[in-house]
Amino acid sequence: MGAFGKLIDAILFLFFALMAVIAPLIDGQTALPKSIFPAFLTDLKTSYIAEFGDYLLMEKPHFLVGLVWHELVFLWPLSIANVYAILAGKSWFGTTCLIYGASLVASMAAILGEMIGSGKASERLLMMYVPFMGIGILAVLRGLVSCSTKSAGSVGKRYTIMPRRKLA
Image (cartoon, rainbow, N blue to C red; front, side, top):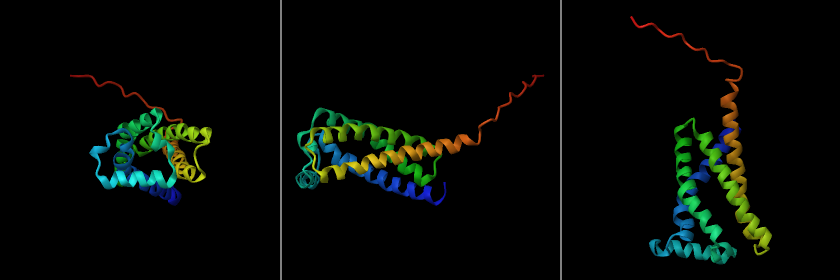
């Protein structure tokens, strides 16, 4: 994929590394009891809500709590796996990247749909959430490109069946 592919991988690596830390420590506060988190983390989230006016994190609607559980159970382990895959150069990175990106795009469609549809979100709050949709699309495209380059070499090739060897 060349230098452009390396740049995309670097952007995705930074995102996945951040999400490996942010998901359980910050987003987890939406679904888990606050008592299990240190005071400085709950204060950080409270100041973010106040500064950006994030009414979703303040109100905690049921769909958002469900999306956070999805993030903690499904996307968080995938982000850790993707960090490993990038560092180790694993061939399955394209597949896990595609899965993560498709899931992130679906989650962000629900969140952005609520924000835009309700009219409650400020432009500043939308600018905080919209990049996640962009990263999701980038991850999907990265996954699709790696799948298409992998399968391009095998187009038109047929596998031959080897004859059985006779046992003496």
